[in-house]
Amino acid sequence: MSLVETAKMNGHDRQAWLAEILDRIHNHMTNPLNELLSWNWTPMN
Image 1 (cartoon, rainbow, N blue to C red):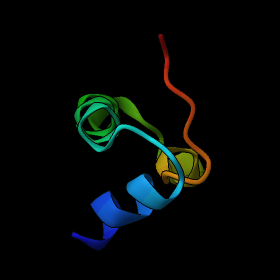
Image 2 (tube, rainbow, N blue to C red):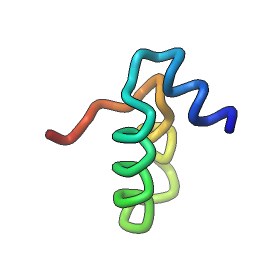
Image 3 (cartoon, one colour):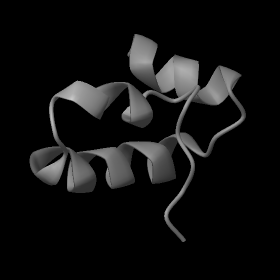
């Protein structure tokens, strides 16, 4: 729940952020996982 609330605090659509992160995480390299955190995230669209 705290991840979703953090996305909200960073002004993101929580559902869009979570859906994209869950879609991208399986192909994402371990080292740059911080790119997926809500305060660093930028939508791919």
